[in-house]
Length: 558
Image (cartoon, rainbow, N blue to C red; front, side, top):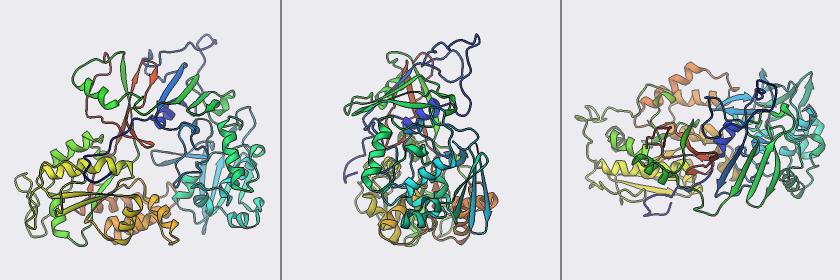
């Protein structure tokens, strides 16, 4: 966001991640019609019952390129492309942050000293066409991601797999610790972190279709074969057409690939401004107008809980007071207008959205519910709504202007604080400049920090050749090196997924919530509005759906 601009325009885009949630019906296939015949197509917008929509074509318009990046070659963090995940699946997937099986019907993790054994029971997983998924397919697929010629994020995160160093240096694929035991594939990893398990979402391909990665050109040529639909997948859909500005997926031939609820998915690129403006639709709904056609609303919570963290190491008194005297109503309304909804039950710690700290100078932080004016003799900048306005105030909110959540939240927070009588300036920094400030402990007294992407910090830091512990570095900055919190989060980061000490984590997050002025914000909830048989994504930020949802409308008749 450039200085002086009131906010960042939220571009219209498609909520493909939401589409993936209801396009595939893992793990049960669609039931046949009662008479054993073909299922009749159901209405795509208003099915007769509350079950999923079956049959028909889903048409998606997007301003983003639709060719996609099925191998994640351009990604700096593990973030599987949601559209291609309908065609190619990984061994595991994340469900609201929880590790669950995908191709693997069962995932068992055992520890043997510093070595972790991951046992993945495939149990009949097959490629489109009927060929079973084997350990050889898994080994060859992982070797592609571990190749020195692969440039995406999967490579570094999978490097905990035993034998990866030998493979990279000598090309010895047999050295990779991937074995077949009955109907299970067994991986051996040395001191893996949570990022290793996230990287197991990498798509698995048939061994016979994979190239020998002897150069970057070979890897990119394989990506083109994927886009052309020449490589069998394991998802409920297969590629029927892929070209500039258009991707068409159709139901896969084999039911083992998962249950495809729809017959066809068409994704097309349109010119900027060619998709309906979601805010316009919602404004009309709020005013009681009835847009053409029938509209319904689909919702899906996103697995992110954000925190607004003030750096109290240098200006503790002023910032503690600022956090304690926030005008709750104004800030909550602004956050809701930015697309966020208070969901205190989704966060750890005691209920409630905002913290109230004791004034370090004595007494309570709030007086009769009225905000206290800024300290230090600063003049009020109330009424200035720009995220980058406010002059040299007592507070400065620094944020990563390239991060979708930070860029969306910062203007609302700054505006609400200014309206409450606080002098505050927004400081939108380029990503590298923001992380450099965070890592160096310099600069602005307040940071907007997204907990959802602690690994982004590590990825940026790794580029500069500095050893790091991804979570530990970022969280120490956030939590002011509280030893209890630090130990608990570091232990959770190193723990095998699902084995974290829940009691210790709860204690840590209670301390975070109580250690003013850390303010737990919200868990966003994405909303997609559906009209007739065409599902169109409303404004989204990058790949993370974020829709203004404070306008209320009845589902029926609007």
